[in-house]
Amino acid sequence: MDVGELLSFKPVVNAKRDLEEAPEKPRKVQKQNKYADKSMESDLDTFFGNAKQKVAGENRHKKKGRLQIEKISGEKKVRHQKPETVENPTSSQEEEQNVNEETEEERQMKLLEMWEEKVQQKAGEGADIEEYDDQKVKKLILSFEKKVFRNQEMRIKFPDNPERFMESELDLNDVITEMKTLATMPEQYHYLVELRSVSSLLALLNHANTDISIAVVDLLQELTDVDTITENEEGAEVLIDALMDDQAGALVVQNLERLDESVKEEANGVYNSLSVVENMLEVKPTLGPAFAQQGLLAWLLKRIKAKMPFDSNKLYSSEILSILLQDHDENRQQMGELDGIDILLQQLANFKRHDPKGAEEIEYMENLFNCLCSALLLAANRDRFLNGEGLQLMNLMLREKKMSRNSALKVLDHAMSGKEGANNCSKFVDILGLRTLFPIFMRPPKKNKKIGSSTKDYEEHSVSIVASMLHNLKGSQRQRLIAKFSEGDFAKVDRLLELHFKYYNRIQAVDNRLDIEKARLQQQGEEVDDLEEEFYLRRLESGLFTLQQTDYIIVDICASGTPQVKQRVLQILNLRGGSVKSIRSIIREYAGNMGNDNDSAESDQQRIIALADKF
Image 1 (cartoon, rainbow, N blue to C red):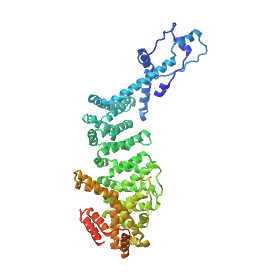
Image 2: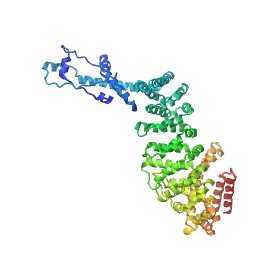
Image 3: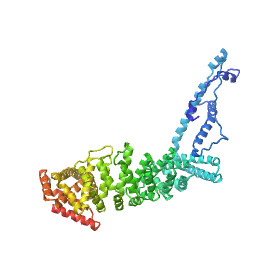
Image 4: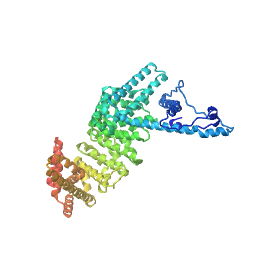
């Protein structure tokens, strides 16, 4: 019988039994005070004493997990026996006596009410647990250390007799749960480090009983919870540094390797383990390479590749992988060495002809695309992407017009940009990618709320891909690209000028707002020059990058294409009140911000400036 059944239990009144046990003289009925009557409290303790032992015993039995040890000796069980049926009626005098007395059922109900009040009082007392002083925290931590030592001792002493060490294991589980109290006091985390309990906690991740390791993961998840540690970032950093010094990443991965996700509790343990990693990375993003080197990146790829039904753990794995690849070239390099590019392409191939089902699977797909884009920032991974037929897969996704189309276009943008993308640009033309790209360039799809894509995204990526190909293509392939702008009565030139005016007007509006903001800051005595980089980034986010790429394409095709192309450009500029001067200004600004760190970059910069002057 669990606690709920116990509290809802109403004993059946047996009139005959009551009369037999009653004294000869009637009891004097006294007025009861359920909060002050000590005898009532004594009855309460008597009534629930054995029951509490049974409930505690049953709860402990449940915690034994898969060891399934049944403690038969020494266990006291509370049994409620059904009273015998009374057939003979009582005398009228006895009935009158019972009427005057409090019935047993009413008394038991009062006892239950008092029990509930005690439980509530206990809960109220639990709210004061945040007021733990230093001594109480130390006492709790030392109690944990003792339970750890006791469990180790009993397991060594009785390795083949689980009944002998089970009690210590349950005690250990209880104290780990109790230590979750510390999650409300990040200012006390330093005691975990000073008393060397961090090492003890991490060592338990390899405990033979996975229930213990899961309990530790749950504790670590609460200790590193972002909402808690932001209250005391200094204490959080002390704990996180200690965790990493003791190889937390490697130990978490070792535990992940042995957890069986077909068991609900262990699947939850996997999820909470990933949550611990995310919490630590949010506090200290620089830990990304350390986690990857300690085996986490390899495990994430393995988990994503596993042929298992889609679930929250697969989604979470893709999210953590995306975080690891965001800002660290070391992780991108390791990703390529572990065949991560091929794994991502294999998983994304599932979405080339079928849309993801539901919001979570959409998020999973987008995470994989983001991982691929981050990985392609490393030049070596561009070649792996090319050899893995990534271009063909992305091109097919563009043709199929599924939800994956916008993200596939973004991946192509990353794969073909810069000098490192030259081989991919050439291959894209060979696989007839221009036939797929230009319809999107001419008529970008509408906004899709499900995947968060917009017309602006399609315009930005398609224009950027065309600009990258003009930078990288040589010979006949370059001529094939430029010839596209002469087709269909120069329709693509018209589209270029349409994009130019759209984004030029948008940037003009942004510049006007920034001028007002600069004037206000100068009146307040602030240095505006220090904010120029920030202002430039805001202009880029508002569409300046797309405008720069569009105008670069215009000046390049005017210099390399037929004379009719330039005539068409000048004609539209005159009709719509545009000017050659504005395009030159934008191109010079673009070239000025390209950087000239090496000979190749400087050569590109000089070439673009020459195109602007020639235009």
